[in-house]
Length: 210
Image (cartoon, rainbow, N blue to C red; front, side):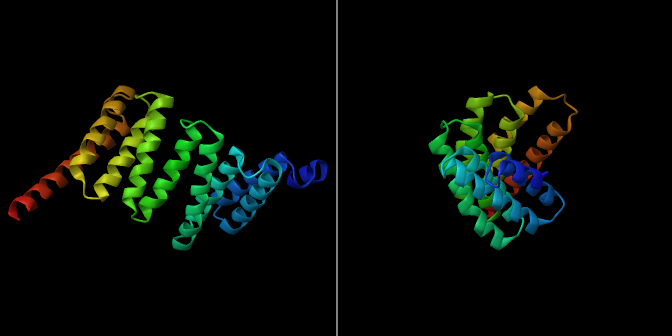
């Protein structure tokens, strides 16, 4: 399909970039990361050439490439961060400030920074993504619930357990409105709250001994 499109449409055409991106995704799922990177890089180069450096499709391509590079460990994470940052800059400039694509890019970078133990930076990005998600999707939505859980986990990693607790409770209240009581999402959130409550109690006992 790629060879046909390149022959019919020329090597620099949006449909060719789309095919390259699809191939990159396929190679990524198969664990062929070098081949995937080559496809994503070619797709990105085409989009930059024909659409310019500030087009939302370029930002999406950057996100795809960054997501792949993250799988490469420490060196890959170092390469991924500026790509995510650039994608966010493009979305801020080319789309509205409450666009879902911007929220996704913010969450992606926050996930990377969390992995790098840069929790304060990640937390700031997740709060902004949450605001966008709530404005776009409403307060009672699975994605909003997930955003609260991600924020709570970052706060937990920072040791800010008492700040994480109300966020998990908020997520649980959303899940309870969306799902039946026996649903896995409800059970998982309840278990997270129970674990966090136990951690808070241990933290309080240590503080009282000090």
